[in-house]
Length: 409
Image 1 (cartoon, rainbow, N blue to C red):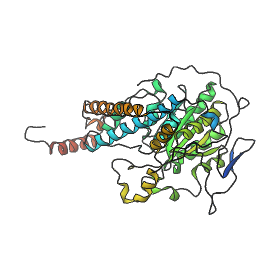
Image 2 (image 1 turned 30 degrees about the vertical axis):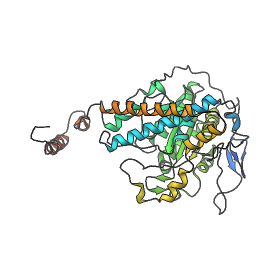
Image 3 (image 1 turned 90 degrees about the vertical axis):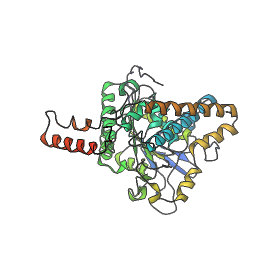
Image 4 (image 1 turned 180 degrees about the vertical axis):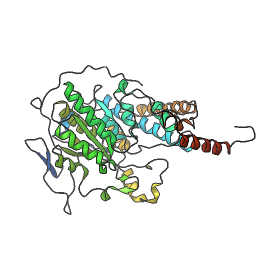
């Protein structure tokens, strides 16, 4: 499952090259494009009775919706590629479920589930090119899959045996970032370097709705806009920043924040893999063409807990979760595949077998990993050692020894 990123960088085109289409259009709302390429909403969402724009190509019932602006970005998609998107989402969900189970069994210290966000991650991940560079948070397991990172490599960090089990330069996929929002600064700086190099590749940074409240994200927006950096900010708005709902973080839809910085913002149905694919392709094309940054808000839902240390039943009700389960991204694409006769029962049965094989491989790989070194945390605090660290190490060693059985294990 490794994909080497060996594509040579090509001379970068300027804004005078091919122009991307800024904005989105759905149903009763429309976005107008100004001369600067900044998306302007035709109706304010601050008032009552109005709804933010939402780019959708596939309804929850699996019905294809026409969209003049974004259809061209998926016009050439084949039945085989559609089945590939479905396979990606199914296998990613299976891996995620296995990792959650392994944490419950004590094999992992923690796990951040992506349950419900498969379409946002697979759609955007498959929109990238090999020479694009990805900066994830700690939940982008689907994007890692698309970039060719072996799923078992993701688990070493959550087991505590390494700081990331892959070489970022092999797949142009940065190590997971635990600090909330800081990776957007890394992505912006990297994108500014890409522009100076004259390359036509792009950068994409992932973050959540909670991270959008961080100062790092605001600074990233400022620098990327001023320096016209080729970066796409992909915000997965899963409605909850741990236990804090989105409405307690912002007075306007998140995608509209981009207007204040002078670049386009688009809200896409984050449970629609086709729409996420199309919108991200458009945004990455803008970046490669020298037209600067874009903010994509994937409107989705975290169907599970924030992490395995979280209990979502303490702050949200079953009615909300059930309403979003009806919009399940995998079920949505399956319905489309079946009604379009792009997949038969044989395909689904074969994928089920592949899914179980993946779960078994992940389970065996994790159980074969060494136990974490409990004392490693003390080794690199100071280059030359420190009396306080030595004291804390001794205290921790005594604490660990208190659990030893008669056999000394």
